[in-house]
Image (tube, rainbow, N blue to C red):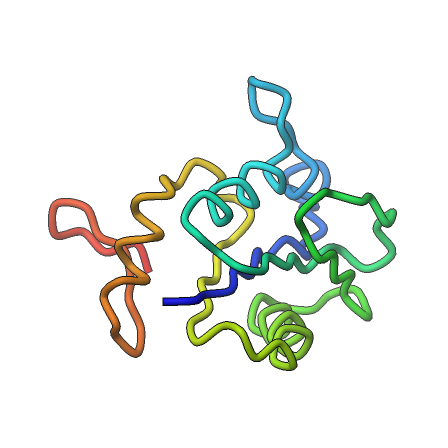
Length: 131
């Protein structure tokens, strides 16, 4: 099934010390790049990411950057902003929403959730939900 990926990376990361989208993993990839890679490897036909308001327009190949229109928006507002920009692309039927602070999700996990054909799917491990 054709799906779009939406990375929620618009938080300022005040408690974290800066936006998590631009934090680096030990292999030097940003969380944003790692999330993009997971979604692409899982088969996303388009990947977009909400980014903090006023963030530098860092071009990340294979990613549609969507800086938030203002500061202080919550995660739901960030998701709505991202979906507003994805909705005009008619190629996808499902959207996978991935918080940027989950850069180590496996592409196989994303693909399995997409293949469930459910209205909503939440990953779980040993009967513990992560939704």
